[in-house]
Length: 300
Image (cartoon, rainbow, N blue to C red; front, side, top):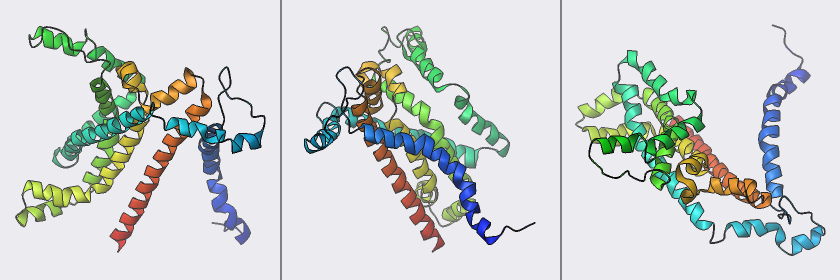
């Protein structure tokens, strides 16, 4: 194989990574910078963005950060709080459901069934997310499947109000995020050394102690990855809350959507979107720092 001259070899890594950086710059960094700059503007009289006549006067008057001050108002804090606790609850419920499933697939299920079970986990991705959400709308409505079964069995006399409630939103979020929690957990559990579980049992530890002291700590990277993959999308979700929750369950994603679509207030919507993006980036940076530190501990 012919070797490149030293001058060309030095630039080879940059040439190979250039398409990736170009893609990230065009589709991620550029929109982020545009949104950041737009967040310091003001809404025009008829919507859109107003022109700034005096830049210095605009800066000294404090109008350049007015959107961020407005976003911290008492009108929007309950929406942030609702989005946060629903994202936390979705993550906890998803973990509670996913860990037993992932444990069964990785450790207890026969080898010939693992591929089938994993295929069933990813089957929802074969259908549009919007269609799956509308399917839950048909299931939860007063004439839907759940109320029909309950009334036909005599358990209830009047249909339950399931649709357009926080329960419906939570159910839709958990259903949508389950695969993103199951798959990282499965990968961590699949790599688990089974001899450690046997050694724990031989040393007198019960199933609970073995899980808390051996299984859970060793699969913690998969747990953290699943939490990140579930919490972040749940925090900015707007499709599920819009379809299954209606106007009663507005989340921060719905607030951003309304600012761009209905209110036509792009600067204010950009400010909230950038704040949400900043929170997501902080979480990702914290996860990267934790992963790096965990890897260094393993090496030591």
